[in-house]
Amino acid sequence: MHAIEFRAMNCQMAAMIDTHTPAAKEMLAQVPRWFNEWEKCLSRFIADSELSRINAAGSHDWVRVSDVLWDVLRDAHAAARWSEGLVTPLVGAAVRAAGYDRSFEQIQMQPALDGITLALAWNTSPASGLMHDSTRGSARDFELGLGLEMDVVKQAVRLPPGARLDLGGFAKGWAAHEIVERLRPYGPALVDAGGDIAASPLRHGAKWPIGIANPHDSDAASASPWVLNMHQGGIATSGRDYRRWQSQDGWQHHIIDPRSGRPAQTDVLTATVIAPDTLSAEVAAKVALILGSEDGLHWIDRREGLAALLILEDGQALPSAQLEEYLW
Amino acid sequence: MNTQKSASSKLALRGLLLALSISVTGSGWAFISVRHPAPALMQQLPKTYQEGLKITVFERPIAITRSSR
Image 1 (tube, each protein chain N blue to C red):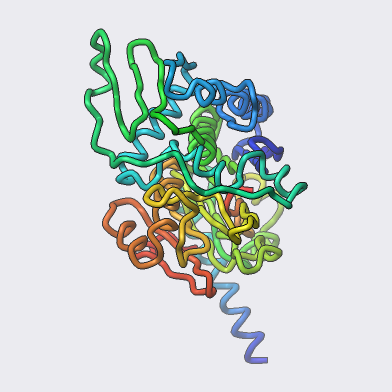
Image 2: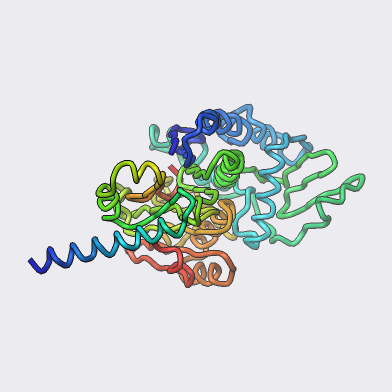
């Protein structure tokens, strides 16, 4: 087993491949560079990133984007529709207004925030506006999903008024999946992008054991009482246990409920979802957290291929109907 | 004494299951994810046998999912 660990996208990353060939080791060594390249494109904390250019252009101008950003935006757009508008990349303005206006490391270093106004300019509209199939490519072919306009011919995007992009979770889920696909020809691989995990199949049907951190006992994360078996696919956890901060209005966190434009008010502290792919797991985990335990589990149970464990503020751990089959 | 015997029986049963798993794969490669104390059991296998089979045994979770950090 070759493995590496490094930091990127303001998170701890790990990648491993279950073979001993020199070629696999060389490929694995490329992983940090790929993450760094994508971070320069997808981060809202880097002033000259592609994402920052779109946010700077606002609703005034169309901005042509690279293949990477286009892929992530297309996936994020699909995720917004799948989640019925509950998870959208257009929360950049809301999350900034809540106080998450610089990298979390910087917030930790400078915890005393100035007065934060939560009167948001951004306003969500439900996922009702997908006007054209993105594969048609007519002269001027738009997708207007959740207000984000995507010109598939020019590969350009434009924001709705007042909106800003935040691709944090989407970017990590997309990157984990992309890297596993690149490593797959060299051997069974697993990528952990700050807790969002993608894996390709182990040989002989064996399974990767993945622990779920206990948010009430972070020091004991390695001795997690919950361990899932994953043959391939994705696992992600969404939580308000870590990236949170105090403002004049009390504790804030980074998971925005688009219905209110504010950090989600929920009884769920962390939501972990196992899904056929990492981005689906990431989106479903956010949905479960935003909806709260009762509606969140109902949402998960209605969708094939998903299983979840919700850990509540009071310490309860609530499994979805399908979780049992994944327990180690 | 009884406790030791019981533990020994459990270990033997796990050994049997492990051997069966290895036999079933039949290709010289076996990847087995099993609960503790299987790693201790693996250590009892002859070294050459372990290396020849290239068995990957996960003693504990290979990764931990948590909210982004």
